[in-house]
Length: 620
Image (cartoon, rainbow, N blue to C red; front, side):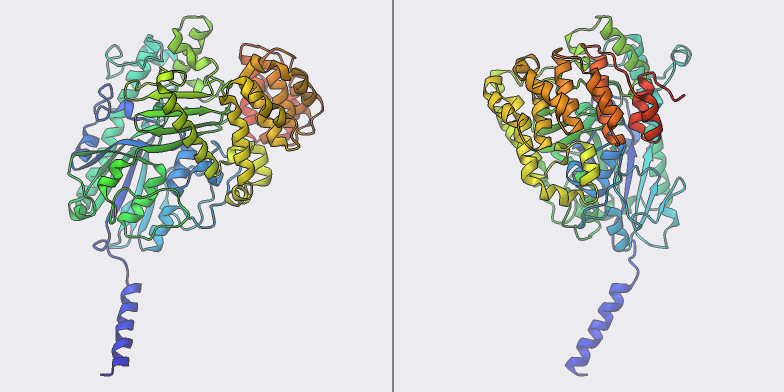
């Protein structure tokens, strides 16, 4: 046989191998079991005050517990899109919940289950998706309430994801009558209530009811494990249990504190694939991992090549040094719009500290969000605040925030003592401030532009827009960070920003004025000019907002005129957010709202309709 013939035969055999079906024996299965709306604070495995979860604890005994796992966003659609893409939401335009526009994926990224399918995996999702980006056609073989691994071809490896809604926020939307008539298995008098919450029967019952939901969820998780065992698949399958973000008691879901971002994560390691994980059974990993890392980790376990465009890195599998994972101590978080409630918050958790950057600090946490306030605990909390019956810690939710917050999470796990003004932590503050600013600039973070601008100019290709405008975004970050200086130092920069030819710069200059409040009263005349004459509607609105916050002028005429003239539902939502803030805050302004126009122009815009509903305006 000739050498040439030998090579031909070998190539033919290799080709046959390459096109032969991938067998389960070749790659591990991976299962994600995802509980909705719970942070680590509600499971005893992670927090002494949490509920017992024996089935999840059993998974941990045969695997690894991650003490520092984080959702990068504290709400579902943003968090789940981050999971599916391995990309930071503010970089790829998926940071707003609920999406106003479904954006395309970056050119070099597909949702990670699609890469698994291309490698021969069966992918099934039961059944929540909730993406803010176009998923493409190849993500799931089956995504439905009937999806299961049992529909795959014989001996085909699989990736299966199942979400558990029993502990979703909606489970706490009970009535007074239910609270009076339905007893909880958990004793309300025995539960721990976070110090930022009032210690009332309503809150105690709400906590107890949620503990019951966690225990029910745990049994449902166990039911899936039992199915895997019955099918003889348990020791061939990595099982990830985690929460899809924090929550769900007030100041949890929707808020970029530990309660909204720090999630439980347990990975059960199958006996057949122990060699892929250099960790002891039952061990705890203290290194930081976040949702951008989860998809890359699954691809790495499956032996699938990592896409170049993702932000995350694997924390399990071949080539991963667990000692290196243990050294990871940093996580980036983001919070933008939640339904109709707008905010711009970025967080950096590094080691024991969480740094929170509130880019609109006057936009207090407790601002109306219709879905949140279906919960009796939320309603009671606000009622007690208005009645003056809360202590300083409990009041903070309804009052303006500082532009910077710094918490020692180990000493103060519920983040009630802001260290940002403590001279003893000045060096830590400066380091965290610089790190976060660099992160926001490097992405670059698209939220330096209002959502309406992004919808008009960026959402056809968010990543490209970000790169084209990277220098401008960095300059806007510097303008926004003027609010971190002492006012006399910031004045020249504010003056320059307000005189800029760039509307985004003027926009942020006015937000900085609002952050300084009365200290910035010297810019009143400039703000009045901008409110009356600026050619950009959102600049006029931000000028009126500043004037209203410092009570230098009634913002009603400017706001009403802006709502009368806007042709954008997204822009109307931004205006209504500022209007609600000025109506519900200390100022208490009244507004004439062109409701007929808004209803007729934007009947399907949830942000507009939710705000109008709250403001007591219904279609005729």
